[in-house]
Amino acid sequence: MTRRLLQFLRRLALLIAIVAVATLTLGLSGFLAAEPLLLVRSPPGHADVIVVLGGDGPRRAWRAAALYRAGVAPRVVVTGDGDCTWIRATMIESGVPPAAITIECASRNTWENAAFAAPILTQLGAQSAVLVTSWFHSRRAIACFRQASPQIRFLSAPVGPEFPFWRITADPDSPRVLLEYLKIGWYALRYGLVASVAAEERVV
Image 1: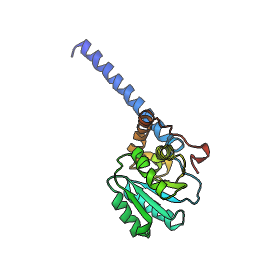
Image 2: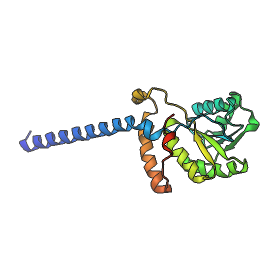
Image 3: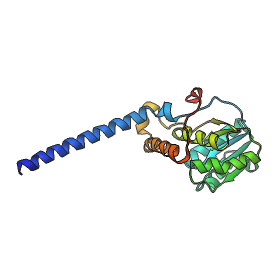
Image 4: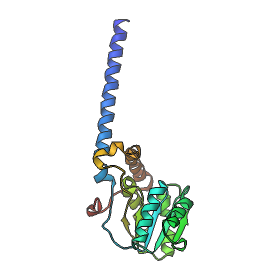
């Protein structure tokens, strides 16, 4: 092995090590900041409608059904292509009357969830709504809905993480947590979305 080749391999190894450390540092920082930056959980209260976003169907369906049984709202809107009918069926099995559920199965992303649910919420005469989605998705979701329907007061009652926040890297959702930062940036560029809510609603 020539001296020049050896020097090149050493520099390459150093560069790989630097990139690996930087990636690990950014990843850990993202996990540590996930709770204050991504989670929005509103104080408990009553609303006109519970809105369940598609994706991660079982946990969101069970969470929404529990809110309905607790009397949080008399109506439920399920929005999202793919598992909207399955979420509806799961909620019915969990004690929600079929007549209380309206489904919207055309939306393919969070922005469309908010945009396509807007006329349904207007038709229902909703003045307030509780959003049910995954905890790390709650900030982007509530920002989308508030922008699509500014006349409605939106609250957030997300599905919590499966692990304590100090063990977030063990959570099966951990890759999606890091991806959420990129999605928030993309939504800010694509839809002019300001993904922020009142400070008192960050974590309750």
